[in-house]
Length: 140
Image: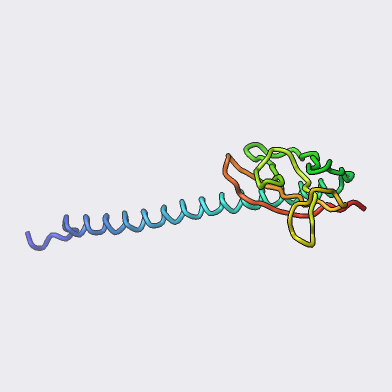
């Protein structure tokens, strides 16, 4: 019976193990690529949303803040799952878009509105902060 040709059981098991290891590595790479693509899409959407909100605020009329207060500007509509927020003078995240009167010489909030406000836009996706963008609104 030594003349019979074929594969041994050990050879088949080793070949199947190698194919399994290669398949697991390939599927792991696909899962990693999919997750990376999702994160990149989330960040790009958040960046575009933050830039749009900043431009929207800059195109609105200047709202003078009351003594020691802040100016509130309109929000844009955000996509499902995203939230457009801002930072107030106490460095707290708030749901409105806030213009904080700004002292440019000392780089800190001012108690009087001298015609320049710092606007910080924070974008959250599914409750997790994704990006923050800051700019200034000037009374022209």
